[in-house]
Length: 412
Image (cartoon, rainbow, N blue to C red; front, side):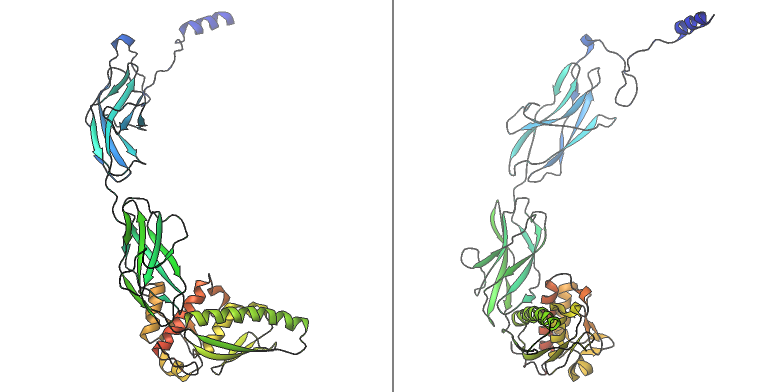
């Protein structure tokens, strides 16, 4: 009985067959090979043509009676390109037969011949020839940014590239000199040492070996396929070199703990003096003292500085912060009576510098002792050595605003 039921089931079950689903999951009608014709293709259209790329749209107007297995475009600098030359397959097609392909890595200023192709069981069909020309490489475009990182012998400029001109920037830098229009051939120059400059952006370039209290002109430059492009000429004047000196008061026979503190403080004061002397024109003599009874560190306008036992404060950040006090921040009547009102700094020079650093809405905040940002009040405020430079630039701007007591008059 069981064998009989099994035989009936087998005879009544539909026969298994190989799936012939089309791209949309529907079973396609089987076509005899001798009924298949080549597909037919319509006109091509071109969009988003650049120096190195293009988006090409094509149409399959007739599939030739069979499923189109692949479609795309082929191109060459000679007429009638074939898939054996350069080709790119479209990943999908619309129900209307439209498909698009994006090409890249083409040559600028070049005429290309393009044909659409479609492959079915009958072979490869091609459209007629179409052509387009990639655009010419243009000059590099720069934004004009303010020059604000200026010391006595060092300066930096933030070069902002708006467009690479559609080409490849092979060199980016600044050139400068005392004449109005410096060039890469006749002036000093500094080259940006980083990578990835071809996408646009802001790139800081450092200059050295400048002369103090000297007028200069600077231009950004870039080299691409068109040659050398220049930005606007920007005048700037270096400041006088600072003269921060110090006396380090030490015990004649220091303990091991004292010697370790002296070593840390020596590095800190030498580094801080370098920043002050290169990025301000302060003339000041300070006295550095190690005093374990001091909770953190303190200083007065006479130049007396004390550092406590905590190694957390034996660093450049704290040393520059205390030097700020010696030149007038939080320690002078100018600061208390004029500079800070209602929690904000009142004078234009330093407020302009903070806007250059942090944007047009930035202001300097302060109280009777401290100011921020870049007042270096806590170790957490330091993210890079540029924070030390910004501190000095703002101190120099405060001197232009009138902070002169015990640190020498401002002399530009």
